[in-house]
Length: 390
Length: 118
Image 1 (cartoon, rainbow over the protein chains, first blue to last red):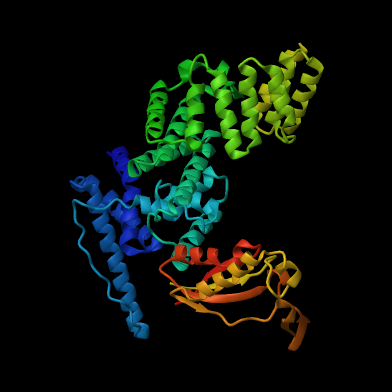
Image 2: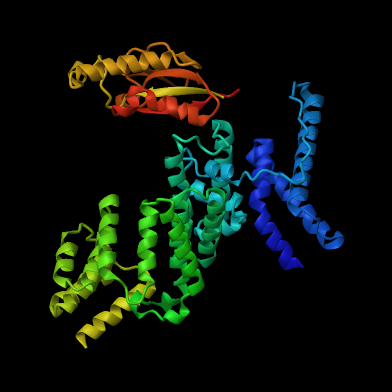
């Protein structure tokens, strides 16, 4: 019972809060009202049973609570100052058709007038229903810092007039890109180790697909996250990074890879040719056995051309090497301006080793070791260097 | 919502800096005037009064009851306020769109959008 109640809360928080913000036009008031409604539900539902329509119950209770609060504040204001406070309009919630306003909510949370850190935190708090303390822990900042960040963001939305709406067509491409960037950033925070955040990003990705079924990049982002996340359990063994080709494929979640691929198919069918489509196609090809390296090299090349990212070019070099042309791969790597990036040196080392240039390969591993921070990757490099010298 | 748009000239050329101004083509110069005129005529805009250049500013402080003055603006000349206007709009998106139309924003300056307490 307890667990299922928590699940309902988790699933409904975003929609209930979005609906209350749409009704009240005030993030802070809406969040307090939602919290009260959920607290009342937690006390009452186990005793009296879960209502037939939990969402409508939560929204109605939240609205009533907020209206009570506004009335109380108004009475207090009248007693002390005789201020002219506008009439509160009391709406009755139509139990069957509560509009889904989560899309308005996520576009507001990811508005470019807010700092990126604040966009991420606000999205996790409002749509994801994470507690401030959980978000603080995930981003390794003190809880008070995170609380301040959220308060400041909510206040700016209200005071500066950030609109609660899905942007009009001429603003949509930029704003959608901002939303997807926030979700992908949350995913990558999780992919680096904090698994619950990756799962949260996927949940957000699924919600976006449901809300914007005609946007190819939305499907593509979900595809990218699903396919990468499906390989998570195989990425580390005994605290050491495992290269894709050495991964134990029995640890891959094949069902999730298949789901990711059908999301990618959907994106392609919708005519998607964007950056997430490219990245999802690359992730999908990496999950094949054997991998189609020439095709991967071509896709990385296209992605590098569009993003201008030397890190992507480094990946392109790896694909070129795997496709058989180690010399060409090394020539590409030596052109890149990434001297402080340990993967550059680790990749050079690997290419030099394959060309039997042992001395240069050792030196490149040593340079990579000077730059690496993550313990799992350090161990991997040390092992490679030992093998080379052994 | 009411907003004040503060125009920071930055490196954006104006007729007051003839050398830089001359680097704009005749068409670009005409566009600058036309854009400012169009902005001032936009519904909801109350144009600000024209300010003399930041170099003519005097900055005043009081320390221990004594009035201290320095020549020039409070911030660096480049960061100084060059002009302002008021805009009554539905929301921040509308204010951002208007700000983006102000020529200084695309020529090396920047616009600060500040909500006004109502």
